[in-house]
Image (cartoon, rainbow, N blue to C red; front, side, top):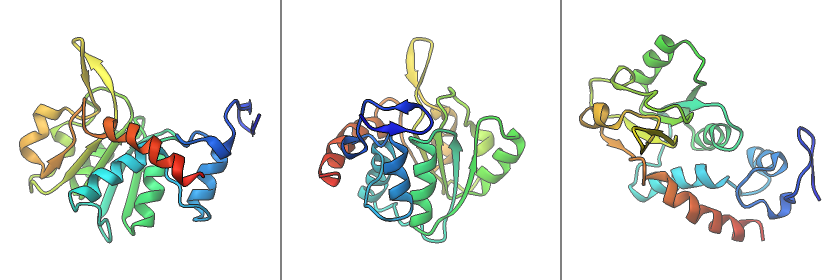
Amino acid sequence: PAFDIRRGPSMISPLKDVDGLAWVVNWLSEIWLIDFVPATPRAVFTLLDSYDLGNLEWKSVAVIGQSNLVWKPLIMESIKRWASVMSFNEFTNQSLVQEICRKSDYIFSCTGQVHLVNQDFISENKNQIIVDVGYGHKDWKAVGDVDFDSVLDKVAYITPVPGGVWPLTVASIFDNIFVLQ
């Protein structure tokens, strides 16, 4: 089996890691030695590109999260697209996060904290693009990081939960099979 420095022996070889869990694969992608993007970030950019919203050149992007699987690759892919990126985790001072998010063109939220992002994070211009990658449950229903109903009329585009990014993540796993071949 492969070896992961942080967790010891891994059951998945980096050569077969289509989801992007191995740090080796992510590191090679970050320094542009391979054209690999973990499945969920690949899904985000596939979605944006399919609606002609994927040109992040000189756009401001706020990424809220903390995981190596989604948050970090979202940051790296945004930088590769020449975006100006600010990243936060759920423990960052909320008033600072809200202020930066209100000024951002894109908000990517991937914390798994239900309804973390609400109208306080949204600008009055109705020009923001919100991608909700988070997943949780409230009142026995699947919901995301973004309080969808409270921000729907205040943004240009928003991804729903359920739906949105998740189905494309599954498809991206299959795309990654061909990348790692």
